[in-house]
Length: 294
Image (cartoon, rainbow, N blue to C red; front, side, top):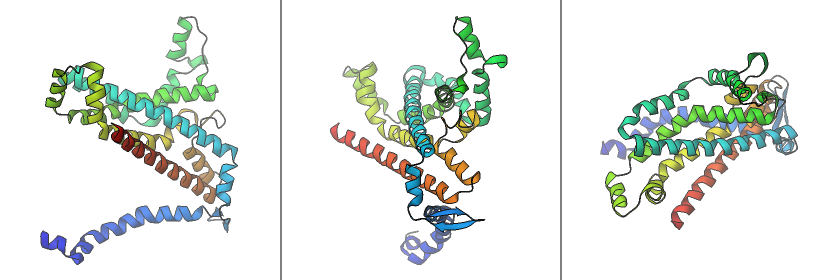
């Protein structure tokens, strides 16, 4: 094995095909898409070089800025909710339910495997109003409140989307963080308890610092996934009403496939990629600063 790893020709033969496939599948489309950001048009009508015109158009496009604002709002609220609920459930599994948590973990995780469209239809039924009154509005009427047409406003649709996504994804993050908490040695926890650390003090000073790597990975994973939200809002209310709940991904999709504007669509995709990169960089740098101060 040492002879093989020390031979550059052997390494090239072993890794070359994989690197070539990776380059063709990953790198080339990214470079191709980046190149399209400097052009206007589509393959049928031809392309015209516009320089940075698509980027100037993005920052003067009210619909694009509205989509960017919704994407950021959605990502912040959902990421905080996913990590908070997931970490709370993970603590419940480890310190309260312990070996009896298998059934609860399975039940809470189950919505994660459901198709997004099926979950969206379920929540549209739950929050429906009018002739097809859903259980939520029926409950409002029972306690003397008026029914709410949740999908007639952007705020109502956003609220339903938040509840739906948190319900669907909290089981996944709970299992992810649960695996990280299991790596904390029992001896460390027992020593902390003997020193008088219980409850919140134990979590604050022992559990959170020792689970910081998996917690950080969860934050990065959640932030990047929520910035690229697409199917949830599309299936729930098609990005409406109007364009109030349209994220960048859905706006990019419509720009490319409904209006055949490949250059501007690629520009939106590139800006979204840069946004994901900056958020990830910010999270890592913040975590590094916290470790230093601790």
